Length: 97
Figure: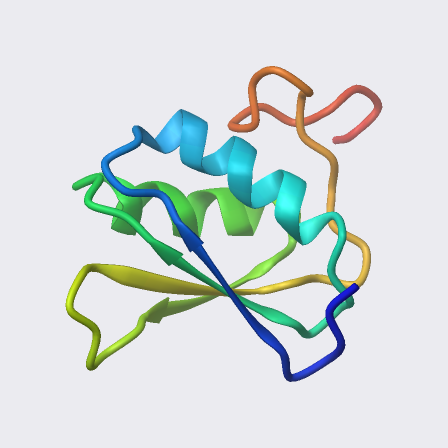
């Protein structure tokens, strides 16, 4: 389990955002609140979808990470994120409003 202040990098390559969100959701579920994930992806819609997903789940979208060779985006793990649908991470999970 990552501690606060840790940075974990997920290399999403050229995966589409739906698959990226599954990877991100599964990884942040194992991390401590406040830990940061750097998501590396060539997906052109990531800068649109990531902030929306973070708003929906309660994670903090920290924006673009500068000084990297490939597009990288930072997300801080929330203490009590809202769940998402198991197969569709862009939809809220059962029982969430």
